[in-house]
Length: 318
Image 1 (cartoon, rainbow, N blue to C red):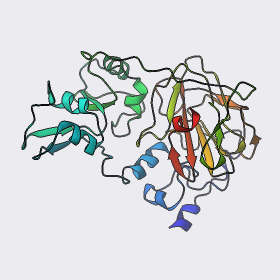
Image 2 (image 1 turned 90 degrees about the vertical axis):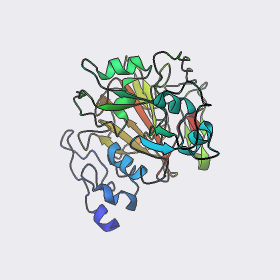
Image 3 (image 1 turned 180 degrees about the horizontal axis):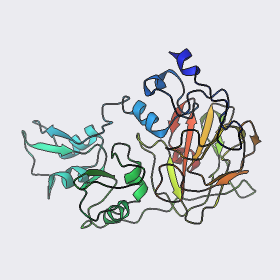
Image 4 (image 1 turned 45 degrees about the vertical axis):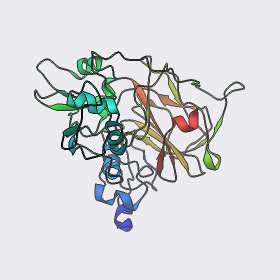
């Protein structure tokens, strides 16, 4: 099966007639999702959707749909929430509970796949209006892989959407913390954060905060900025992907191999300033923020992988 996966080497690209994907990165775009576990999916440049297909098989708490849970003797709402990896508030909101105390054995509870709320699409609803209602970024709804939203973002009346981290409008929302520090380039005042096994990374762009955080279905962070600032290499390495090989998903992207087991991905870019095989240094400008691929607004989707495993960038960058 590994041999089959390796057969799909991409030798030509869509940018200037030259290769946009290193020849050692097979299976880009057309890879059968069933073959993903036989090779490093990040290294192969496969789509976000295919990555999700693999991740949904990795744990029983990773669900694509709302399920029903029957309360058992000894259960508490906090215990159920912990077991099913969602917040207590999510259970309360989904089941119309005013308090956590009125549940008893035999009760049936709706359990959403992630913390947040479920919304039934009504006439006139748009991604932006729904996002505003529940105090989230529209990318969080569009990017949840099981919402089945088409690329043109047209919603169907009666469609049920999961709003990750959404909060009902009657609940007071605490402001999201600013994520600091955020540096564009390496310099005397720009700290280098040391990750396990020697990976050192700086923030790849500037923003006032994050619009989406790391999750099992979202293997990176989203950094928004309407002015579309430059994107810089988080650490030095070799460019192994530069372009848009599959026409959807990540859009224009760059993957840098840092030579120490680490790779970083920079997605949804409007412009790319590097080519496959080029060596770049930490802090070097590699492109410009944009909104290509499955995106609802100008932002950078940024991932860090170590030996094929997605890491939470905030555990390394802060």
